[in-house]
Each structure stands twice: as C-alpha cells, then as structure tokens.
Image 1: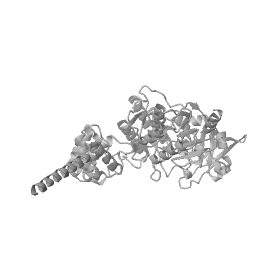
Image 2: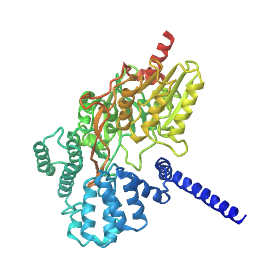
Image 3: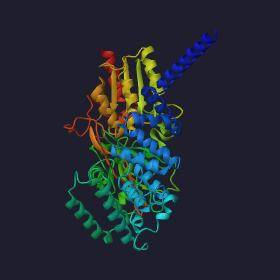
Length: 563
C-alpha cells in the first residue's frame, strides 16, 4: 500500500512537472511573447515589457527595435551602462531614433563628459522629424549643465549676435546660420541649386543687407530658402516679428476663374465675393508671380493653395515692393459687374478682428467639402450618407487619430456601414488634407481594399492642390493598390518627394526654418511625375463656391444617374 502511495506521488509529481513545463513552454512561445510585448508597448508600458524584450532580443538578435526599447527602459531605470550597450546594439543594426540623445545622457550620468558631448553633437546634427536641433529640451536640458564649461559643448550652441543693437549684423548672423544648418541637415540641399550658386546667393545677400529694410531682408531670405526646391523646407512663421507685423483683415481664395475675397472683417463685408484685378499699381497676375517667389513648393499646385496664406501678410507684400508701407493696401476689383477700388487698413495681432465668411454673411451653405473645414467647425475626419444618391461621403482632413474617436474604430464603423447600407458610390475626400502621420495610412488602405469598397466605378478618391505630405503618400498607396478613381485636381506633391519638418530657430529673429531630411519614395524609382493627376479633372470655380456646389460630387451623381 505504501509503495502504491509513493508511486502515486511520483505520478502526480511528474504530471505537475509536465503541466508546469508545458505552461512555461507556452509562455516562452516567441509569437505570444511578441504579441504581449507589442500590446504593452502600445499602452506605453515599457517597464512591464522588459522581461519579454530581453527574451525576444536573445531569440531574435536581428531586430534592432528590441535593443532600442531596452535602451530606453534601462535609461529610465538609471542602469546607464546597460542602456548604452543596448542602444549601441540598435545603432549597429541601423536603428537610431533618439539613441544619440540617450547615449549622451547616459554618459553624463556616468561622468564621461567627452563621450557625452560627442553623442550630443551626433544627435544635433541628425535631427528627427519635429525634433528641433536647438530647442530648450536639448541644449538647455538641466542634465547637460555640467558640460557648459567645455569648449566642445559651447561650439554646439547657436551663435550669439555680435552686436544685438546692430540690425545688419543680427540679420547676417541669422542668414549665415540658416545656410550652415540647412547644408548640414537637409536631405539633399543641392538638388536644385549647386553649392557654388548657393554660396554666391548668400554672399550677394550679405552684401545687400545694409541697403534693405527688414521686410526686404526677410523676403530675400525666404526666396533663398524656396530655391532649395521642396515644399517642406520653408520659413516659419512668415511674420517674423510679432510687434512689427500687420495683416489684412480679409482672406482670399484662388478659384479656376480668379482670386476672390471670401472672408473679411465687418468693415469690409461689402467686398465679399469681389474678384481682385489689381493691387496698388500692379496687375493681379504680376502680384501672384511676386508672392509665389516666397512660397516653397513640390509642384505648381502648391502656389494655388498657399498663395492665400501669404497674400494677406502685409510684411510680405511690403518686402516684395508691392506696397509702400504695411499700414494699408489699395485693391482694384470687380463685383456684380462693376469695377471699383478700395483702401484696406491692416491690423496688428492685438487688433485683428473676427472675420466673416461669404456664406455666413449671406446665410447660405458651403459646398460639402468645406462644411467641416472651418476653424469654428473643423473636423479632422467624418462621414455622411447621402441617402438620395446612395453615396457614402468620407472626408479626411488630416492623417491623425483622435483620442475620443480613434482612427481604427472610425474606419471600422465605415466598413460596417458599407456592408449594411445601400451604397452606389464610395467617395473618399482628401483634397483638404495637408498631411500628418504616414504610419496611420494603413488603416485607410485596409478600408479602401475592403470587398464592398474596392470596386472600379464605385470607389472615388478626391484629390487637389492641398493633398500634401502624408496625404500624398496615401494617394500613392491608393494609386498602387486599389481600384479607386481619382477625381478633382492634381495633388500638391510628387509620388517621390523630400519631406519632414525639422525646425531650426534663428538666434536673432526667432524665425523658424524648416529643413527637410527624409526622402519619401512611394512610387517607382523611375517615377518622375510632378504630381498625381486625377483620372477625371474637375475644376472649382467661384460660381460653384457661391452656389454651395461641390462640382466633384455633381460629376459623380451625374455618372450614377447615367448608369
């Protein structure tokens, strides 16, 4: 009997061991480990993911992301040597991110100042998207204060104007600094301008600065930046000095038939709907060409969209020589068949009034694609089922995901609606979309590839001059992988373009110069198109705007009725 009991214990022990072993084997499954780790990382729970990442990095030493994340975790845990080891493993596999910044911090904490300065320099000279190379989070970070006595560290600081009371010296400092940093950080600074021509342009501008006023200097620098030749490398903001800047209390829009005033302050509402013919002594076409000289572009469509955002800035117009002062501007216009002239007084930021739109003033409706594209009613993404025509209209005004309406859930709701509703046409509108986070485009691709959407003659994508950056990448993806029909106007960028925003702050004016440092290739390497053209071209006229008509939807509705 005792032997039987002992044997029973042995059997039970073996069974328990097998269960535990099986459980451990299940827990160690790399696929399950990866899924658990990915879930924790998506919730920003890196500490909880540490043990999984350690095992994953051992089982899969080819994935640099595991090492990078461990580097972050060990930095947070103040295990600086371990953090350094992991970040260097990540870099060896080509994963950099902010690793040079973390390496610098780690070396500071270990008292190794030379290494700290070296990696800080590497970080500053290879800026990331949106990671200002000379912002308060980097050089003024308290962790780097003990480096401040080192000459190598001081060389990383932006220059201080030689004489803060000398406008000329200060502007020259800004100009030379912007030139140096653009050469250092831009993806390909000499793609349009040779280095010799670049240097000659800078030398000529330095020689001219003593003869120019500040508005003229700003314009000349902006014109130089636009010569680099991509739509993301630009001067921000255009009004470089808030205390000296003035704006017109109106907004214009370029339509297929001209430039019209669509918003004004209450004082000038009688000009709503006026077509601009002349500005001061210049014909409008000449004004347009002049203003476009300070607008950075990927293609000419960018002028169409961005002109309106420069035209109302009096400092720009003054610097271009269009007007004699920043205080007032005379325009010649036509309205309701009559020709007139009007002097418009400019406003400072403090006195700038509320603007009234054409449709609000006349109590009429905007075209559908402008309904939720105004400051007071802006929606980044939304949809509407047009029951009469059986059209599901989806508008995406930014490639983003909102906390209260996450993008994946938004796309899932649309899929469900397409599968259950009677939908004759699916209209995907990205004509107002200036970009965002390209990584989110996978959700739109999944939606556009769904069975009841990806049908030729049912799926339409609306593009236009403001289809730019991440929205251009989305356009390229849809062109490559879906049956959608593009309708509208040419896009504002190219299938392959230089992009990203890396701001560089100039020491005197505080102007931000954005330097593009990534090449986006979503087309074939041989694709030299300057834009993605629509399959069906549809222009937008002032008459369309005035009547609240979206000519794109009108074309689609006419097509559906003809079937």
